[in-house]
Amino acid sequence: GEDVEQSLFLSVREGDSSVINCTYTDSSSTYLYWYKQEPGAGLQLLTYIFSNMDMKQDQRLTVLLNKKDKHLSLRIADTQTGDSAIYFCAHRGGYQKVTFGTGTKLQVIP
Amino acid sequence: SAVISQKPSRDICQRGTSLTIQCQVDSQVTMMFWYRQQPGQSLTLIATANQGSEATYESGFVIDKFPISRPNLTFSTLTVSNMSPEDSSIYLCSVVGLADNNEQFFGPGTRLTVL
Image (cartoon, rainbow over all chains, first blue to last red; front, top):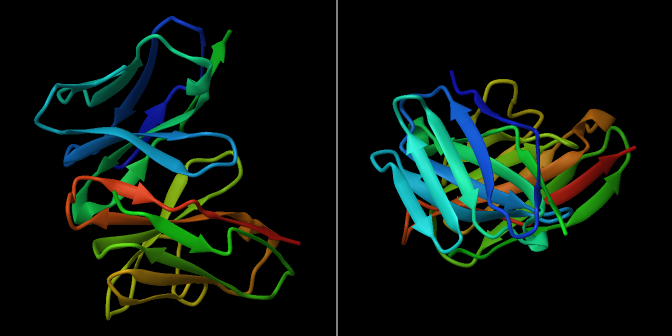
């Protein structure tokens, strides 16, 4: 199957860390992505991780991958109000097709 | 990263009409895709636009409803035919770059409202 599940909503206080979780079922995934979508805007690629890695860090973003459990997470350190958006995880499977998760709406409280 | 533009950015159309959406990329890309994002929903892949041949459609999408062209490596069109209100969505073009085929980028989207 190609289901990708995320929790729908996350609320954090400014300055705290946010952790957004994602689970997927397709074991043939090669790359896993995190995208950010602000209201009325397009999709911004934040970061991605290759399936043979277990961690990737990029400034305030840390991606953790547990391939055995098919679990992906995105940690945002020192969360700011500008981080408020919907975050989609996605994975690339066969024929380079990318399947998206349901999206997590992150609300940052000042 | 590839810069992707889409035209129109938004449109309001009448039921039964058709709309063609254009996607232009500033560099040659290997793969081009069309996605749909219905209000409050995630993205769903409509089809892979193949250069010089018929597009590859996902389950639930057919060529008669969503004809796609891709005449070269930087341009593609998606037509939404015989529209109904259920077709109201954001339609997004997406590409995988030649320079780094690990990254997949998205255009700004075309917001379509069908009355």
